[in-house]
Image (cartoon, rainbow, N blue to C red; front, side):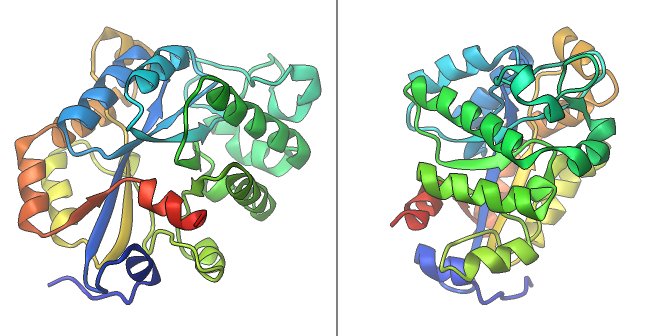
Length: 285
């Protein structure tokens, strides 16, 4: 039996305290075509409810076209200043001479291996300029994001980055992905809905028998609002070249979110799937 969490977010969204609410968000749209393809199938035929777009990435324009053709999809601007792999890079949208603290010696975004060093030295004003550039790029494409979240930088990585991004969310009329505990209390203290429980990042799960792990997590899902950041991808030659050491994470995520068992388990557990649209409406009521 799952514990009952007295959730302000549940009440704001119009649900009882014992309701178990779950956002399944597919991160990293735009990174490559194998990911774009898997995410759109997951949104159309699977249990994924929303996605997050990486604007600086090589396949972002393809993802933007897909979103333009499917305007009902809830999506975030996945604020991106970190590269995942050594052999697959991107650069800020802002000219590099305007944001020198955001690029490495070769002129690329910092790698995930350098993330601690990046977080320690990144200039807040330069970050804000780049985040705004990514949001504006999406808006100029005629798209309407529902929320913001960060790629790799959990809750922004620093308190001042979180506060700056929170301000951008309010300015642009979107919600913000927030994971407990300090920042959730800060957001909910302003009467806004936010996740009640730590964000689940699917990269933290073992790829061995992942369906069984997801089944257990669904059975144990607490009341209140939870969010899973999943990473669907088709494990073809492209994805294996982009992510040689961890492409299996994306393939196993895709296998689960597309499986009939996933939908059956969610229904059997009485879990309510949400996207970010009702969250966004409350952030800007």
